[in-house]
Length: 305
Image (tube, rainbow, N blue to C red; front, side, top):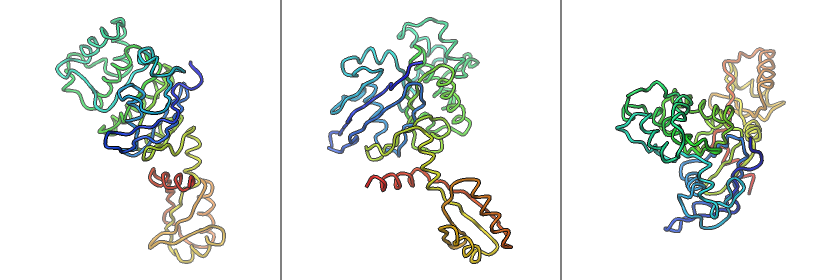
């Protein structure tokens, strides 16, 4: 498996014709062998960044390297080594999965045996004569990924691949991404605006907001930040007295019907519960509430001010 950094951008800037700056000094580093979760709200600059990585937009300012080579002077070589799915799948809906793959097989100049391999890999080997227009959205997404995998790319770039999928489709997509990474050594960049989904599959995370990178690093670092920002919601038989007790040790606050305090994990939840029960207070609910993406943006932004 390749080691080091597989994608690197330095001081990447991009503005559209209306003068709006979409990317502002973006320094992206994607480790080889990782699942890199590229996280941010809609309009944050994720798709623009990925389009630049694929040469679908012309680079305006900054350096862009893939596989250790400058993209501008090695574009064809680099594109031969990566696969992508950006926005909606591009398929021939009147054709079967196998027929779609046959067309792209000729373009990529790979063996016919590879069609069976990728169909099995994405779980579409039993679709037979069923046409793509009869596929669910999740099946179309998987067929598009099968096309992107025909030439066995080292890097796979997926832009919001779970958009519009039902819960089963989301789980299938997540498991496919994990399998490609763990069993086939494929480095995957997957963009999303859903923090919890990225947490379930990524090894590394980059957070972009209003065109600026706010965080980049291993998933564990992001989870440690979330732990620091987590709150525990408590409902008891006597919230007023519970607040008095908890305030002796914790920075506790009371809302209309709950007590809220910062906490660091499950062990502390158990300690708080035991403390209240010893004082004769019935605990009706202990609900850990971790920071969502918007809260993380606020925290990270305030840390950088």
